[in-house]
Amino acid sequence: MIVPDIIIAIDGYSSTGKSSFAKLMAKELGFLYLDSGALYRGVTLFAQEERFIDNNNEINPALEAALQGVDLWFATDNRTFIGERCIEKEIRTMEVSSQVSPIAAVPYVRRFVDAKLHELAKGGRVIMDGRDIGTTVFPNAEIKIFMTADPDVRAQRRFDELVMKGENPVLEEVKENLRQRDYIDSHRETSPLSRAADAFILDNSNMTISEEVAWVKGLIKGKFNLYDD
Image (tube, rainbow, N blue to C red; front, top):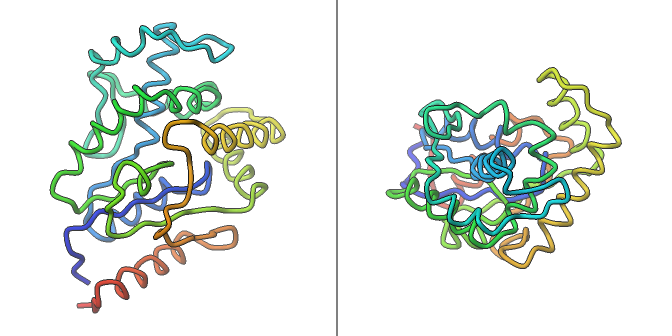
């Protein structure tokens, strides 16, 4: 199946498996994968380490100017870097997760991340996931998918992910973190999480990732009248 030079936008709630799914789809289709969430997490880590955000999620407005000097980028293997430092492990911790939504709600942070995504997506053949990719960042994306899953399923997935990384999470705390992130992401003033009117809903509560891939491939085939080689 030869897919044209399109942009595939995947939005949805936390811990629906958007990133894992998008990475696999990129490999299947020969597309570039862009993880917008990793960029927001990178900004959050920077803000924490440079003390631009406190434990009450109060953000120092000086962060806006400081971001202009931050070299945040992806390696070819999709690892996230600030300068020459790989931050992939640090940005996946609960500490970063607990503050990423307030950071991501700040308009100048969103402009910073959006500019990087547009630069990286020139020429198409890109798949990316986030909260507002199909509504704000790339409203003209040829394929838009909105991913969702049962909250308990999402919490268990996130819990298992943290355990696999050697952390000691508490399931109820993970559920509360997801609930808070859902609320903040859906109610922020700038680019709130919402389904684009032309996005297809993918509820993967009871689906394997291979079933999700088959579902999207069928969607692409139908939209562009494609056939397997």
